[in-house]
Length: 338
Ligand SMILES: Nc1nc2c(ncn2[C@@H]2O[C@H](COP(=O)(O)OP(=O)(O)O)[C@@H](O)[C@H]2O)c(=O)[nH]1
Ligand SMILES: [Mg+2]
Image (cartoon, rainbow, N blue to C red; front, side, top):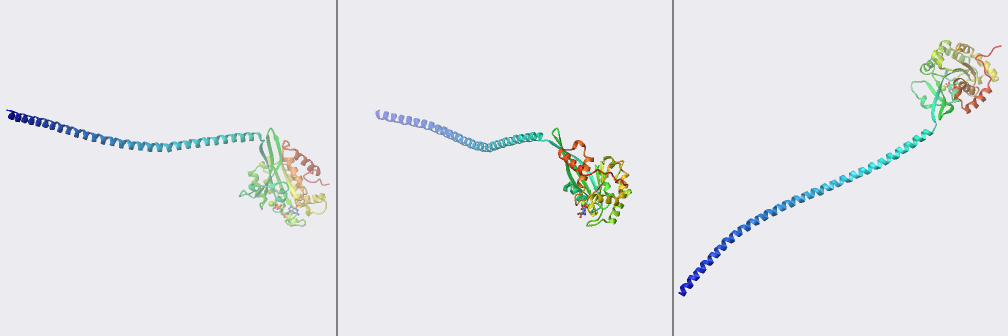
């Protein structure tokens, strides 16, 4: 029995063991499958993590990039703001300077100009320029105006200060350089004139003695038909003084008084024709010499006296006028013939 029993027991043991092994094998296989699934899930999870990490990295890169460009933008904004501030500072300084300048300007006396026009007419070489330059300065800029034969000169006659305003009284002398005097009257149509200076002479360019033909030529040029153009209503209304200046008195022998009488004789006809306008405008005859300065100061003083309003005199001018006018006896248009 015992052998059989042992065998049976052994068999039973074997069968039991086999069952255990089989059971264990089944369980192991299931566990293995589960494990694989978990592994696969893990791998999947790892892949996802990797993917997420990758996304995260690129986001971080983008962020860094954005931060970097945001940084340059911010820097630029800051720079611009600083620039703005600087400019604001400049503007402020400029404004302050402007205000200061304006205040300075306010403090300074204002200057205005009052211009009185004198037209000079006469044939070529009579001495208009010589005479004008005795008391005025050439005005290059005005003289350069095209299409006019007028050379211009100016002289500040006086400066009067009244309530912070300085008024400069200026004589502007237009020197007619044209061939024919009648053409000069165009200027009278355009411009309102305050004085008219008619210059005639006793001899041509380099004359040493009186030249009667030269005198005759000028008498023709200023014949009554031409003269009347100089005394149109507009001129008569604005013109305060007409002067006939007989130049080159140095060509006449004798004393200045003798020369004066002689010169007036040569131009007696013109003096007579001019006297026709005496009622309408002040006319004065002067005999003198631009070269020697004879009567040139009287010419200036006469225009001042006739043209400049009395409230426009300054002290310097008053002094000058006093000495100028005391030196010459006032004379009528034509000498009183005895
Ligand atoms: N002898 C003499 N010659 C003069 C006198 N005034 C001007 N001249 C001369 O006359 C010429 C013409 O003078 P200018 O003033 O140019 O005359 P404009 O053409 O009328 O302007 C020049 O040679 C002057 O030197 C003067 O009083 N006596
Ligand atoms: Mg001239």
